[in-house]
Length: 130
Image (cartoon, rainbow, N blue to C red; front, side):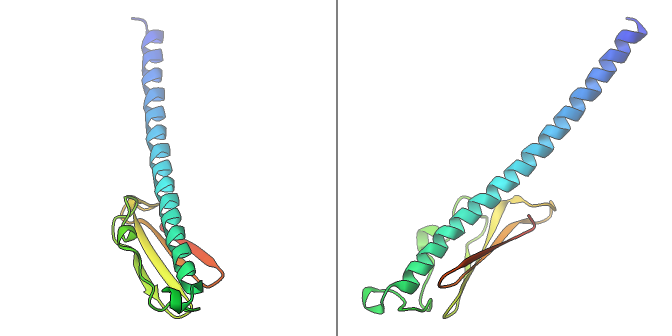
């Protein structure tokens, strides 16, 4: 083989190697974002249930304009998107939901974590280690 052919082979191997590394990085970032979105969707569902409980009269099994007494339904305590159970903190006028994902965030040492604060009329979401 000539020098030009060997140079083209080496150049081709380098380009393929770079393409593989970029592909792995894109897949990892996409996987992390998908997990973050799924956790946010799960917590939004729980927030909706909490707000329903808040608005429902006590005579019908609700909170009567308070979140006190609301619990996470057993089937939603941990979903396939979460690595640990949802940790709710229930107060009279707010519920704070914390969930940890199954994928690593920006730092490989920590999982994606989403905190959602539910009020009577609003839901606020914060992503940690996104």
